[in-house]
Image (cartoon, rainbow, N blue to C red; front, top):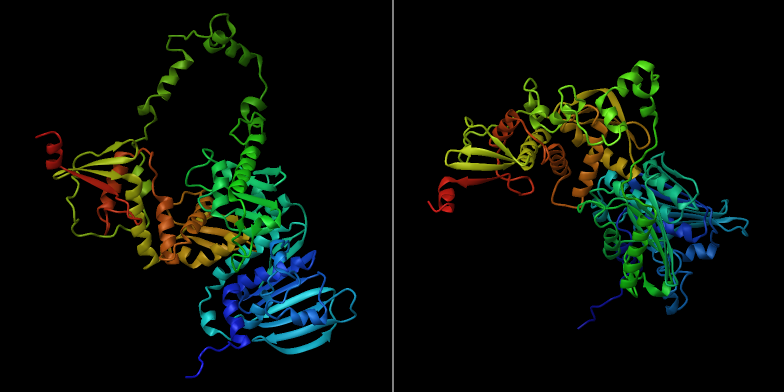
Length: 617
C-alpha cells in the first residue's frame, strides 16, 4: 500500500491559513492598519474601492523596509517581533505572528512599495497567489504603501460569500474605528470610491472620540482615570442620557488593542446599575494598561479575544473606576438655575415693571399670604381666589380631550386594513362601550365573556401587517415635509442608512443622500408627526441595529418590525372611546390578531363559564 498523507503545497496552505485571518475586506484593513502603526507612522491613509473588494490600500510614513525585509514579510510566520517563546508573553506591538501579509498575498493581488530613510531608492514588489511576479527598485518617499487588489480572485467561492458593498463597508468602518480610537496621536484619513469618509487630525482621546462618534458626545463624556500598581484604567464613559438600545458605542482596549469581553462589559454595566434602563447599554471608550505577562493575546486568529491571568481583579478595578468617575463628576440629574436666552426674551422679563402692575400684584391675596406675618398657610375661600384654579388642575375631567376633535385620527393609517372575512374567535360586541384599565388594557365585551386587549401589543400587530403588506406589495405613499430636515450621522450609521434607503422608500420614508454622512428627509409615513422626522429615523436606525444580529430575518422584515414597534401607541397613554374602538376593530381584521410579530399575546379571552367557576357558580 502507498502512503496517503502528503504535505500541502505552500499556496494551498496559505489559502487555508488565510481563511482564519482574512475573512472579508475589513480583515485586511485591520491587519494593514496595525502594521502601519507598528512601523511608527504618524500619518496613515486608507483608500478602498467597491467596499474593499477591488482595492484596499494603506499608505504610511513609517520606518519602511529594506529590500530583503520587504520580500521576507510575505513569508509565512516571518516576523521581527518574536525571537523565542518568552517573547510571546511580552508582546507590546499590534502584530507579531507574521501571518497577515502572507495570508493577504494568498487570496489577492498585492503590490508593495517601501523605502527606509537611509536608502536612496525604494523597493517595489508585486505578488499574486503567493508568488512573486515582479521585484524592482523604485522612487518612493520614506514609508510604505501596500495595495490589495481583487480580493479572493483565485477563490471565487469565497468571493461569492461576501455581502453587499454597504454591508462590507460597515465592517471596514468598524475596523478602522477600532484602530483610530487607540491611537489619537496619529493622523488618519479614510477615502472610499474617491470620497473622503474620515479626516482625523492628531489630538487627544476626547477629540478623537468626538471626531469619530459625533460632536454631540462632546459635553456628555465623563473622564475615567485610575492608576494602580497592577493596572491603569483611563478613558471616558457616556453620561446616563447617552445610553442606547444597542451596544454600538462601546469600545474596550487592552494595551491599545481593541478586544471583545462580555465579562468586562458586565463590569461596566454594573457600574451603571439603577442609573439607566435595564434594556439600555451605556457608551464607553476605556483603555486598560497592564503588564503584557498578565495576559495572553494569542488565543484567537483576530486577537480580539484575550485571556487575563486574574480576571476577577481586572473586573473589580474596571467597575470601581467607572463608579468612582460617575460619582466624582456628579452625573445624577440636577437642576440648572442659569437663565437662558429664551427665558430672558419672555414678556414678563423684557417689559418694565410699572407702578400700576406693582399695585395690582401687592393687593393680591397670594402676595399678602407670603408677606404678612403668620399668613403663609392662609387660603382665601372666596370665589376671587387665584388658587381655585388648582382644583381644576387635579380634576381629570377638566383636562379630558375635547369631543370636537377626532381622537381616532391619531391611530389611523395610510394603508387600508387587511380584510378578514370571519374572525376565528368570538367577535367583540361593538354595541357595548369599551373600558380602559391602567391606561394599558382595553376591556372588550364579547358574546360569551370578555376580552382583555393590550393596547401597545395590539397596535404593534396592526402596524406590522399594514407595513408588511406595503413592503411586499404596493409601496406606501410618503407624506412630503413642508421643510425638509437634514440628518447628520456617524459614518457607520450613515453606511447603514444608505443600505436601507430602497426599503425605507417602500414604507413611506423619502430620504436622500446629501454629501458626506448627511441625508435629507424629504418625506415620512403619514403616522409620523411633523417635527419628529429626525428623531424617527434615528430611532429606526437604533432599532434596526438591535435586530441586525438576528440572521433569520431579512433586511426588509427587520425594517417592518422596527417600524411597527416604533409607531405603536405606548402603554400608559389614555385613549378616548373612539380610539379604543378603532384599535379593536382593526386588530380583529388582522390575519393573525392574537399574537405580536415576536409571539407575545395581543389579548387574553375570559369566557363566561370560566368566570362562573371562579365564583363557584
